[in-house]
Length: 100
Picture 1 (tube, rainbow, N blue to C red):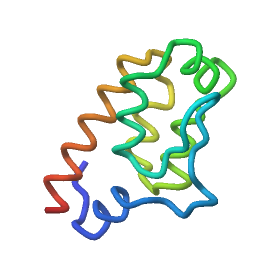
Picture 2: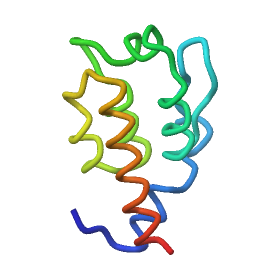
Picture 3: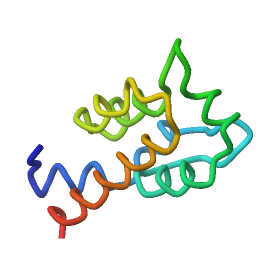
Picture 4: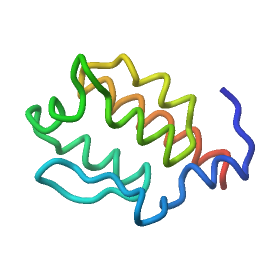
């Protein structure tokens, strides 16, 4: 799951304002770090609003707006907030290491 420095920096950067993620009854997320922070503190009801058997809004946003197909694929089938949060945390650590 190796990624180039330029790609890592792009994935870690803020997405354009019109592509920000609007959490149901919550904040607006602009980047992967903010997503990680919000996932950690998000209630199960909010998580279920965005992730259920019909959809995974986080996976779609990560792929379409942040351009991280690898992470999007990893969490696409994840129905657990704890597992999704862990995968985002691990990916953040990998990308930060490459980008620095």
